[in-house]
Image (cartoon, rainbow, N blue to C red; front, side, top):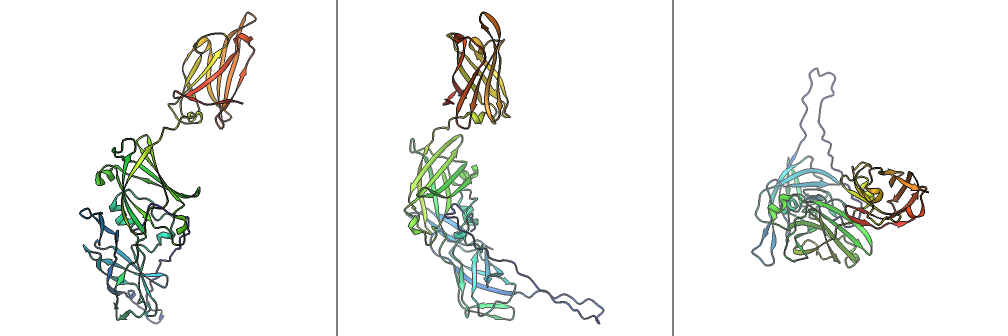
Length: 421
């Protein structure tokens, strides 16, 4: 029982102080020559019966697939922690006995004698209220075991004043500890490729986003290791879904859940309108996810990503041949010429370069061309503004029928839409 999937609304956590100062006695009598022994702090033994009912309960969870629908059974592992608080401070920790039911015996020690006129509050595994903690459910790996050990929260239990007594070093109760409602639903998702309705998907990353009327409330990313699918089976992930906060029920119909899954180099998405989960309930849901078209490469990416190609295509006056120069990105803002064709692009006497200047990508040529029947070096460049996909040209002294002109630019073979400034 600890953290999990959605942090529904960004509400501030209410921290609970957890430090207890232990006091010790020592003599300050200056007449005594020998150091007096330090007395150990007194502790108080406590044993109490505890239970928690309903589906998806307590830290240890076992899935019963013999029922219809399937059900999560509550059990207790040995030595599960229950924190004991009084007056806003932790005064001790109790530990569970192993149990195959939802009932167990808690035993342990308190660091100070509880005040008989104040209630005792019991927190299962953590004193943090997950409903008011924005990251309480982060870090899930898609397994039921991880949920059971870390993210299965329940409302705290209380033994009211007058239902316990302190005698010597022992605390005796006249009532049991009954933990309250689950703070989350638990969902078994089976992820399927919508294209054929049968292929199971094993994402390495899943991102969940909650919005309402266009306002984004939270986005949480989960890394799913390969071992999750070895444990669960292909396509299966378990997540604990935080209950919708009390007082915000009107948002349930307006909510939109968006799931994005990364499968290899592919991206799949699924969107659900409305809030489909009832508090504290176990669900098994088949989700058909749609594969998204790969994002088109950009000129800006080539400045920082090695191995990408940039091909500049252009006309050269009246020469009716393909003219281009292609470069390979080195990933550090520099490019290496790969190949070229045409009157200037393939000419060994043509100097060619692709450089980054002032945050813009600039294609430069300096080639030998005739002006009034005289051959001389002349320049040509195309400057690409990658922030808005526009371009401009500069042409040195040329004759009208020999002027070069830009036609298109490609990244990794995909034509990039650019417009003239």
